[in-house]
Image (tube, rainbow, N blue to C red; front, side):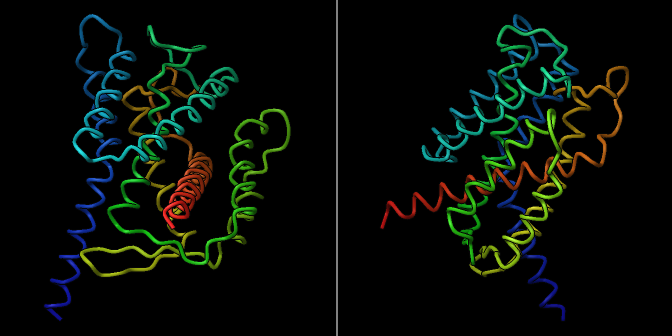
Length: 260
């Protein structure tokens, strides 16, 4: 019994270590948000410093071998996708970036796209470090339209119906038999893909509370004082995680197909 407990703790340590390495970029972003909130930096505005920090971190990760060129391409794609969503949401009044900044586009600081890119960074890093394998993954013709529909719902629900719950149900149906295999210290484990979506989405919601506390952005109900992000936002982050995972998974599958 004692040896089993020691083994479990050892595996948990290795799993935590790999997760920590996978979270390097998100951690740097959160640390930068905290530091720049309480310690004013000279010459440039806070938003501009955050952009410089994110760009410098990406350069260092690539140079240090912590990130591959292919992973950088994925992160750049997510930055553009996230920035487009940010511009639209700010225009619709969903949230705001009230501080000044030189590098802002239509009221949105350019660093904001890196918050979406950090999700992609985590997924790519965890995928490589934990040797993730997809099991019973649905075909391309199903996954791609689903990912597009989830992303577009972030836009069209402002003008038409919000179908996030129907999309969530569709995800449950399509991925009910799907799972991921991953390795920790050479031992293979198995997890239903839907469960992984829920877990990642929940932790991103926790991260969102930290980010808004440090002034990364501001919801209308946080104008005068910070308050907990509404639990309903978990569904939004869950869908964001799903579409992020689907994009990364399909890009990984394309890359593996090219190698064959």
